[in-house]
Length: 394
Ligand code: ATP
Ligand code: MG
Image (cartoon, rainbow, N blue to C red; front, side, top):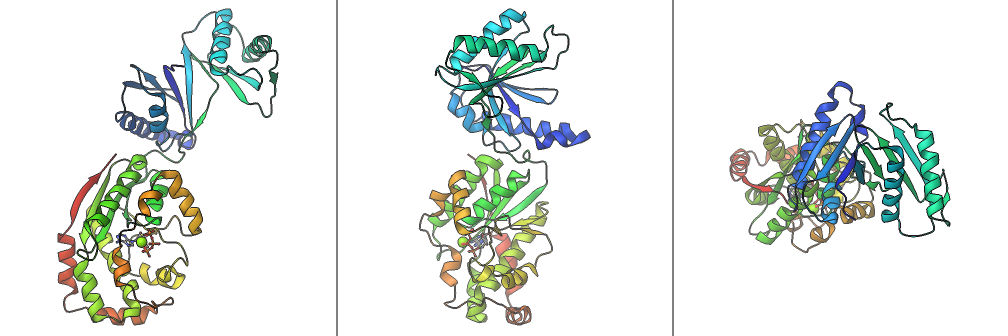
């Protein structure tokens, strides 16, 4: 079946009062961006609380659904028949023909849900419900009406035109891209941080990312893996500006000067400081990490408190309360898992102590960091200067 049109349903943004058009425009912008990447031409139209995608050429159905299902802010995608207003008998015939194409199976339960937004149409919604229901029952002797849990609902919306659809495919939910400021994601090659980026992007936040690279301890392939992860997140979030920072000298210096059981926590504090500097340069108003309480020594409540002490910006940790399996499930759903588990080393695994502190003491960490005073400012600036920017998009 070739659908000329798709009705786009969106929920949360419908409640934004006077600013509603900002959300709708952002949603349309993202729909256009995603559809531009597939074959076919589409017109995107807005009409009183509705967005329509109309196909102007041939297209692959699966590609359109895949693209639309990655647009944050959409709650439902309805492939539909859209017809010009016509006489009532003709409408009934067309609806029945559409249902026959959509549902060739003989036995099903259904319900008809008509809405007459155009009150000039001569027949009201109750009558449409009853008549179309009757038509379907006559055409399908084994079908039955079930108003509570039908297999499908035949929606008929009488507006400027008439929309008819029986399928509502799930959308990604969330808020339209770019409607909630920008944040800097600390993106490693692991499972958690891409998921964290996805979750915050889902709330309409534009994502920028930073990866701390430690050549030659971390390979070019480890960096490529992070670039690929950023691209995979960008399939949902839109293009991501990724900063690759050379962190080697800072790590070596910490390794040389500080107690080894404090290495991880001190390195994390420097990552946060650098991320914050980059964030401020690019007007990001928050940091995002993939930390989850208790997952490793650097993610105990005590460690997180010590990490946060160096940050002025709020740090968002959307997977903070998730078990590993819950993060893995989400990583699989968004398609980052397979890449995340590729076995390339991560910069922290090389410099980790055998027995890192799990209850770091802030005073003691601050004291250890004093041992870095001679060169750390210079190394910090050199790290910032090493910034390699890679735009990641897919
Ligand atoms: P992930 O699966 O996201 O790598 P993890 O469980 O391996 O997380 P850690 O290595 O302790 O956890 O890192 C915690 C968080 O710190 C990561 O989720 C990420 O946000 C950030 N992070 C760690 N290493 C790096 C890095 N090399 N570059 C950028 N961010 C990093
Ligand atoms: Mg990691």
